Image 1 (cartoon, rainbow, N blue to C red):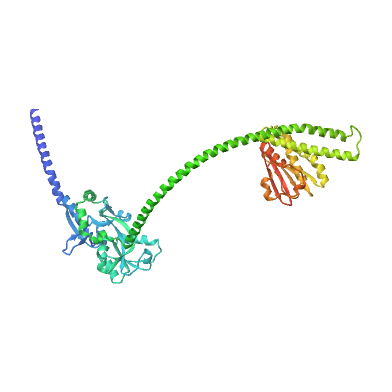
Image 2 (cartoon, rainbow, N blue to C red):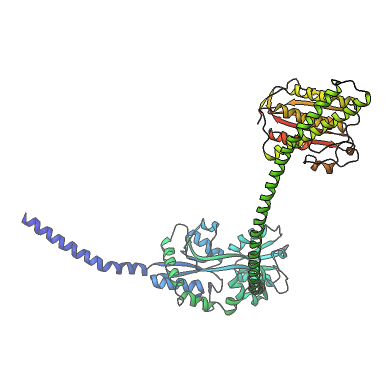
Length: 559
């Protein structure tokens, strides 16, 4: 047991020393491994972002960025020159590890992996020979356009121009330089490059920028899909640090490789647009200040006016309330007076009518023809006056809300027949035919029988009174919920302008023919109010000179 414990102790001490040795040497081993890592980077001609200088050294903004990262991460960079298309093909095959200056697109995302922090941003622009007068994309119709083979400009410009139904021929070139050379030789009308290259080299080929700008793009380092993810993560980390430091190599490289012309020059249309916008903004600002002052002054004026108007409204409201109160009181007194007077007048009138009837029946002695004639005139005038008083009493009760309706079963055919018999003597005197068209399906319904007969008598009397020849027809029918009655005549009719006042109290139609007849103008008003009190409605259809049709409906269930 003692020997085993000693061996265990020796083994433990040896393991501890081995662990400490590895702990000390592991970072060195990792560093040595990292220093030995070779990162293959594709390069092509796209000055000032990436290119080969006259001395044969890779140069440009992307080169400065990747060499700084390589130094910090102990990478050994190996540059593989070629055209843009060759670089993308090598990246897809895994022959290189990184390709700089690659714009992200959904199509490229299927083949390549990208880091997250953008390295640069740019836009694409069309360049042409001076005097080309290319002001918009529409001016590119039937034009030949040189474009970098395999570039994002090639695919996006096709999509950009397709919506304008233009006939454009694209000529691919291995580099931007070659694209400019094609235009300079007259083999193409214009070329597409990114703004960095175009602003730096367009003048060298006698070209100038046009107003056609498209495809704002962000640029990255790209790797083969699902490979070298560690490289891309490191680039993200370093780029984030560089972009957060204004004094870093990132900003000094951009300043180094871009001329003042490139940094400050924008498309001519953009300058004009900016100038116009600036002028508009200044004018708007000045206008806003002036307008605000005017609004403030006007607001104060309106506040004073509103205060004055509010005071007037309060005073006027109080006056109107008092006037309304007085009017309501006057109306109440009027209705009460009319009701009282009507009651007081009906008593002696009924006596006059009664005694006149007794005398006409010769109960007090024989009468000669002249006496009978005079007494009949007294009786008719008294009855007319009594009807007038009854109408005034009814309208007064209605207006005062004192008219009481009796809900009972109504036999409409009997009511119509009774009313016809009442007006029949007048109709026969005038030679007018009275017709009754009553549906066999008319059943009993609930309403005030006396008031239904009153409505019928008013409408029938008017129809006979204002009809010189022809007929007066009464019809009735029943639908799902209502009883509908119509009184049709071939009388004088009603003018269109008189229709609005037809049912108003004390209103009469002002026509030469109607003036032949006596009337108070209460009959239709009372009929309308009675119909409405029983839950129905009344209306009229008329043609001047041809006749009228008065209709009213009453609910079968009553009110």
